[in-house]
Image (cartoon, rainbow, N blue to C red):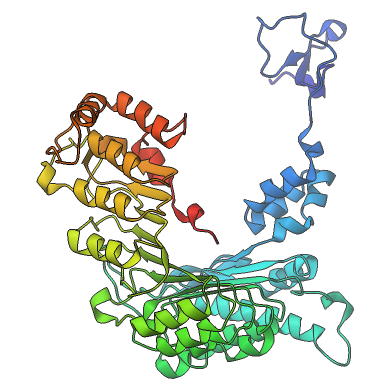
Length: 521
């Protein structure tokens, strides 16, 4: 027969959770057992030592914590205590509202696809009534359930339309969506079912989903930032994509991102009509000389021409004419152009003749430095280029991969040419195999270089450079001596750059480093 035990939980004087098991006969002599306590714990601990409770965390820390949680996790966290319940309604917690397939949904069985997330209208309505007036940004990232996205956009558009009614808005919907300043929509255009990551089968959006998106954009009259990525529209749809945005946000929009609105040449003329636009990110097939003419008379300060894995190859796109770029440089001298490519294939940047290019960034693991591409870039942008580099690690290379390659096969001389020719170069990122002497020559040749990122595992100790007639005996001896070890090279480069803590990066740190932070906008 099971013996009954009197037991319970309590807090001791140090606020530790204690489990007390009371034997019926020795009820008065019981001792609490502190969970997690150690018999070696000192009994001379400071009794005045305070323990901060999680419920008393400052608001700015709670906002950071809640901003990393999903909507469901925020709800459960708000049930723990009153302090965290109050944090649920802090404004910055809802600075970005991420909408995915399963957001505010429930699972429903489909005979063809199995269990699928379906938007729960009661949950969505309750959520918008509670925090709709706090949302500052919408981020749509559908994967499969496009119907969920359509219904979500339709309901929140309807709620914002209630605020615009001349006859008065229902009290419960007052302010819903009024603080939204940014909208980000990424369409999953690749419908390939193959597990091969390079398999591409493109389908664009359109129909009712596009109509719901345009309705939502028309309701956002205070939009500051708009990002539409990989919509892959037909020409007639692309030509009218921004009609509603131009009508509602002509004066307030500051940042516009249009990536792959189409996969064919189709200039989007609307982008030159926003009067206070400052940052523009667009694919090269959606811009031409006429658009540049409009941008020359605008307030745009940063123009990024972005190519991703769904952008047509550079050979299939025609760059803007040198004459149009010269007009831009004359009428809008503060404009800076940034060229960037993000792809899993061997993609190259489409060069724009006479453009005021300030940065060239490759985020392609299979693209290596070639003489044709780099020499052309140096010749075109040697007076304006400030940032250049290849992010991510090259495909098939790891720390265990031995450093190999003769001097003639490596891009050492090309990188030194870049450092010498581009006097304004401020940030440089190198992932290819080079020698330690090349690192020294780059640091010595670039007068304004302040940020040098190098993959340590691909640096070969020693000097295999042929002696140049311009070098003195003293300089060549210094180059050979200092490049014998990577540690000596690091010390010398840190002295040249006047950065005491400079060092080469491990593969882990190199993978996490990005040149984007060196671009002004």
